[in-house]
Length: 438
Image 1 (spheres, rainbow, N blue to C red):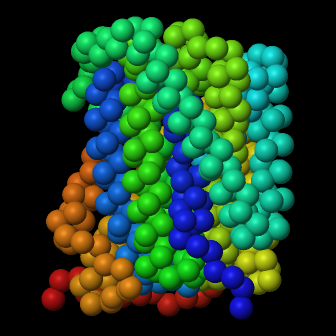
Image 2 (cartoon, rainbow, N blue to C red; image 1 turned 60 degrees about the vertical axis):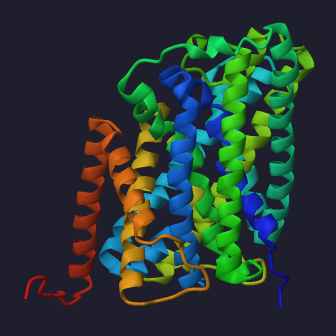
């Protein structure tokens, strides 16, 4: 029997997926939108992510042997139609997220090597990263988890270095002028809603743990603990880092930039070696998040195929290494294609639409299983109150993705519905008829 993955190692995978582009690339944009309210925004979205994590934890304990995570729970609750729509949406979402994060890796590496912000070098480095991490994942989940745990440890140390520098150097240099943080942000609710979508992307990686519940020591209960640990740790780290950034530079000085941590250190005249360390930490963070994304997406493709909603070629599975080979190839191929679209803002919105739609359907899936009295080894506390909070919060964020992204997402759903019924007719499948009202 293969050795089980420990709870803390599993939590490292989730943390690796969470602490990637969110804090190293997007934190400055959040501060630019929300100012000092960005601290509250990170906490609010973090609490919503924690509630969703609790839902995913219970669903994972109910269905510990599936590899499709969110998709599997929706498929188990609502069947093939909604499973097909949510599964494909989330697969594209994860692949898109990998492209976005890998592009961040390319930008940091290009800058560190003195190659400037040339899109050619950024794309080349991003492409090489996707290929390299695909190979790492093909060696098996346990080797991928071991590599990811190492990467997570490195980037947490880097963030601690930033927090320590802010606490010692910046406070001394500015005389601990906390009053400078009283800058009044603009926008609805202090920019919290506007920045919430970006922050939501930053927290989205925790469910990678749910794709290998059966391999975790303690199965469903162990996976739930790992998910909660990863989300709580990320809330603490995100809040401390954003607070540190606002100590290093005034909130109103931040703009939409891809290297906000470097900007904060440059503004406070930090030593050059620390800038290099932060850049290296950003490379590690984006690599770690991409690694976790490819892992969970490959297993999602395998599970969709095993359920008969994708061609059987994606069922190819190396039981010894516990890895879905063709799922890795498909996920990485889509990520590579996305690299050449040239519009990362749109890609982030598309990725968020798929994620939020999947989480929303998971909230309804939990209601379904609770109604049918299906119990797992872990139960979310304070049900159904926190479940209702999750649904309302997700609907708010779904409505704030922007008209273009929301329209595109709805078009994708319609196209997936048409494809689903076309394939059903091609296979001569009988129509399903139910009476909603009696």
